[in-house]
Image (cartoon, rainbow, N blue to C red; front, side, top):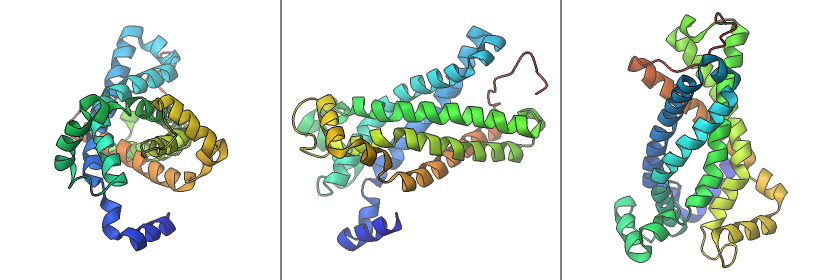
Length: 261
């Protein structure tokens, strides 16, 4: 990873590291807002509909379903910003930042083609990633609480944040491994001419064949695990901190047969 940074700086200058930062920051802030809030909302609603016992028995399915639904909604808002980021990174001379790039993309390609031609691939990458992230984090946090013999409400705010931090790292690494092949393909397919002609699906299949399974799964995986593990832990800590600061209570599944643990 450090060697990669040095190579980029040597070839393109330090400023190249910040290319596309504007749409990246805004896009993932908006996406995170809808994703984390959406997962919490869908978990609560599913639990109300199913009841405590059924929700507990099906909590993994609820984690997965809530994460998939929330990610789909979030990606509607992320996709235009991600398309802009990729355009700026692949062609830095295209525009001077987000505000300049948006109208140019609309003028050249229109809203659907310009901003949503990559919607399918983004879903292909993001939904499995988010499903893994929230399901693994939820189960990991549950196991941590079980191991220490305490319920979330019996711990201090800082102690609960510690649980979020630890479970977030575990979830981030798991999500990074699961989503790495799709993320690699998405980065490749947005480059002009990559994968030949045809639909997005056919181009993705061509790129997958050309690259090979081993390279898709392993190239760059180490740095990605470090980055995503750290980022995910920070996301859960930030989300839980905001909820605590606003007086909101984070939803936790409860085992009706053993409510004290």
